[in-house]
Length: 323
Image 1 (tube, rainbow, N blue to C red):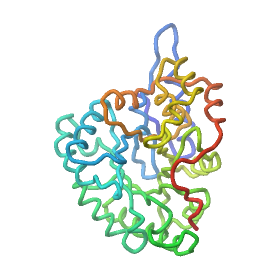
Image 2: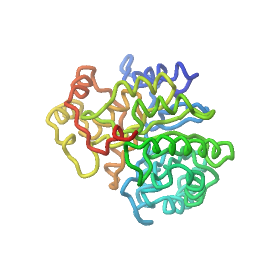
Image 3: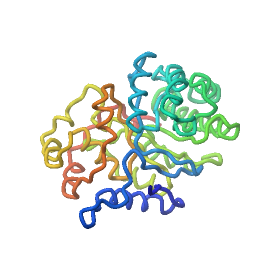
Image 4: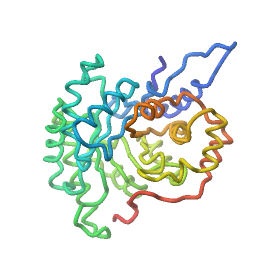
């Protein structure tokens, strides 16, 4: 199996090469292929992070969490994405205790991400990290993200937001040094927020920036900055967000899907993955859970250009308003 990692400056190049290899054939026989479920990115810490993860936004309740994680592990997912505000960390921790042995996995086989609530931005960040670790009931968290660049209750235009997220980062750096978390990063950071953090990172660069990213909303400048700095860009709302079928029902997406013999959801997910962007689709049915990781195909360049040329329309909250 080809592992997608190299020193920082070549990580993205090798990752792009691996994507191409998934579609190469010679003499009618498929060559060494990196399946989507096996694609990984080497973080600054040298940890390997799966590029396809399982999202748990709006997935709550012990029985539902256990059911979807059971199905996701069986399908090959090895990254679970959560957040304090999702209200499901405890249920995930409980489910892992039963499901890891069931699937012959250990803690080291699973990559767990959770996030700092805007309520805890600033001076409460370290305590919040400790609480998330306790909720998940595991030895460490693989990745802890600042969920939002602003602090809850503070006017978006106030410089206090910048001060608070800097303090959060200092506490998260402390969390790494104390062994609570292995990697730290951000979510919903735009270019301005990223440059601010990269210019004053207190000794640890962000590993990941998780942002809204789909054909109707993508930021090439942000992607280039992240690539330059060795930061993995991770997409959320790849299908257009919850209860929004605008992209799934898009005529051009459907045409491309039909031509490739794939579903519109698979095309939208592959569009991001083919740009070396990590994804965290969520689903509840076994059919969709399996389809969302069955991305071992290549979208032709002309169709990639079509998908990337859609008019821009943001579906989620806008971090550009945060000072």
